[in-house]
Amino acid sequence: MKPYRVNIPTSIFFGRDIWKEALKETGAILNGNIMIVTTGRSLIRLGYLENLKDAIMENPSIKSVLVFDQVSANPKLSEAKEAIELAKKEKTDVIVGFGGGSAMDMAKAIALGAKTDDLIEDIFYGQKVVGRDALPIIAIPTTAGTGSELSRAAIITDSEKRIKGGIRGDVLYPKAAVVDSLFTESVPFDITMQTGFDVLAHAMESYISRAASPYTQMQSEYAIKTAGEMLVRLSKDLNDTEARQNMSYASMIMGINLGNASTGLPHRLQYPLGAFTDTSHGCGLAALYCAWIDYEYKYSRDKVEKMLSILAGDPIRGKSACIDAMRKFISLLKLPVTLKDLGVDRTHLTDMSEAVTGNLANDPAAQEQDIIRKIYERAWEES
Image 1 (tube, rainbow, N blue to C red):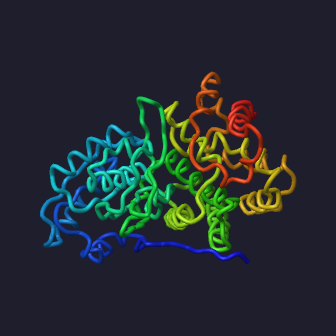
Image 2: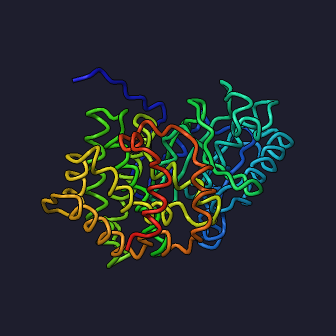
């Protein structure tokens, strides 16, 4: 067994309806001027945001609570610049990310930008390095999907240049993550399935990753099995609170995998796809997955067959059977199976191929010649 290291620097609070008690226990972090970063709309309507503000204000060391809710589903660089300026103006001390992955990614970008004189766009484009300082972050996810509460990345989109990418560094790890499945129970069907598929994608890609360890692969197997069972249950009954809690747990541990094994080609290819089409992360991943399995099988056959067998709950052997099992599962969640289903214009494939960035070598299939174009083409044609 090769040596490996697992890094989990974030304090984790997990359970149903534990968020108030968890906030009390993070009292040493929560002080001064607080900025809550949220996608806001449904959380305001349900009263969750106001309840969170009230609970934070119970801490006697809190001076003020400010809300920034101008966060898009694909958080934009322009929004980050606006929020960073506001955080500096209001002398913000702590950032609370409250929402889906978009809110938490934005919270990280703000926490970083508020503690440096470097421009966030220069950091985004690699002209400046991620420093060693950021405002403390408390992450409270309200969807079961991204695992951003335990990762070291903030995914941002430059909508003007149509570039989606990540700002990464250990300084972006939240100080605390409060993972309370109560907040996920009002999430509608489409977002439940989109974010749930992201959990599965994190599990599969970190499983075949060249950076995987026995620990992360063990967690991947658990998350694949959980997603395979719990998303099916939720597709039949969104009020299944046990399934909600299990998906929150799977999402959380995949956040650990993101920080220790990372992801593969589908995530690298989804970023330009999302930037060009402004479609959701989960839908984009789903539309790429059958094509990725098609090529990944050549380089990771045993792992692909094991992953699909765990997902299906039955032995799956052979490339066609693996692709069919993947297609069947995606269809069950009512997600797009192809880029054509997603409404992607084929003329965009070349531009998207040229816009792919990041570490591709983590994925064994990256050694395939012209793999980016091949996956995009197959994902568009697959039927």
